[in-house]
Image: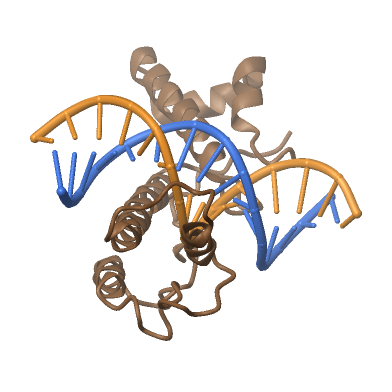
Length: 165
DNA sequence: TAGGCCATCTGGTCCT
DNA sequence: AGGACCAGATGGCCTA
């Protein structure tokens, strides 16, 4: 029987992607806003007007040139890019929340970084366990030890086991 | 190499 | 009108 280890240490504090380097989230958001105002920057993810592009933005540009495509109102591209920036900013916020949640969910030491779906499922199971501990009125440590001694409930075990290991 | 996970772009919908 | 939210599509990276 494996020993359940509650590790409250954040084992992976790295951001989901390293596009923004070591900058803190607020700097990342600022960079995003800067990107929005620098669409012609050569290092911008988006190609400038008339630039060769393999990106989706470039594809869209091609679509604008496509006679069969419905005509876009003026400024559509600018609005689309602004919306992309907002969407990325929104996703960064979501990922930041996921990281916070990960740091509160106990994992096995050997467990690799939790995926988003595993984080959510594990958080649900963890909250349920905390609720059971509260209802039992037992000492949390002894309650967990009791669970380990008796073996986790079959359904719970399936929920807690996220890595398949 | 297939499958899982993720970031990104995009268009649609709803809300303010 | 513009922003927030959402889901689909796509492509990259990683692992078994």
